[in-house]
Image (cartoon, rainbow over all chains, first blue to last red; front, side):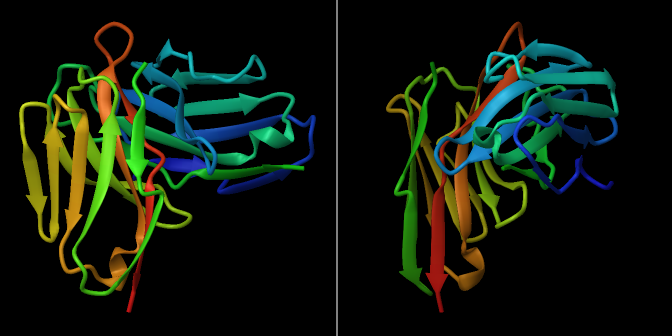
Length: 118
Length: 115
């Protein structure tokens, strides 16, 4: 099992450019989460999907951010246009049946994408 | 709104010392609490998970306790080693939309163990 795969590992772009971050969850997992990590705010949940359907996007900071999950094996997080304050590490995580009242269902994290917007 | 706080933000100790990391949460309506480790430039690795009905969990030199009513958890590391140097995060599982769950994280405690 290759784990959760994120690409690219590093992204440097100029303000105003479009940025697309990619995630391949672990095969068989049906819950997928996008988090953003900064020194100031820690790990923030941006959006999560269950069975490819967005469940809660209340953490998405602005309309500039959008996320899709066209199928069970791929998700994207897009920022358009990007701004310097979007600089952070973006993590994708997946799990099987991450329901409220289910037992032990660990969340598996990718290694993140470090985004720098200049 | 659930908020998770970790104290201290950073900790530096000599090798061999026993230490305690603290985590507090504002809403006791949690399903479980997890402690994660994060190494620089890496993702998070789950260390221990405590169900809301449990009081503690142990794995090797790590022991995590949970007092749900007071909104507190501690991670105890015995006989610390330089390899323990990392950022430790706690997270609570709360109810999301519908019957889904989601993890809310604290900001982490960065631990440095000096040889």
